[in-house]
Image (cartoon, rainbow, N blue to C red; front, top):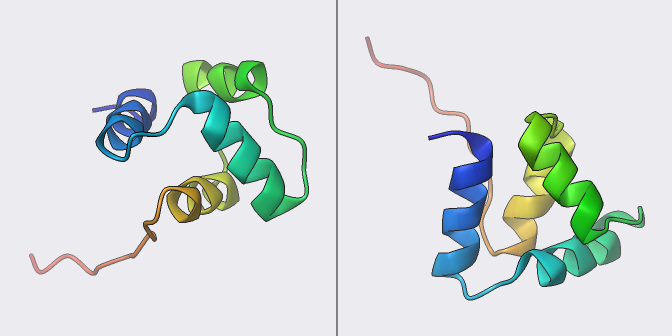
Length: 70
């Protein structure tokens, strides 16, 4: 599953629109995010790790790195 589909799935699970996500990202980061800029980043698969962290936070999640056991 690519980032675009993953984020869309998480938004659906959490009853949030891309518009609301853009608004929350703007509030959390202080940087202006729009529906268009978010769709563009998702389509180009050009989200930064910081933006992924902001998205996770906006929908009530966090990103965790877990060492592989193999």
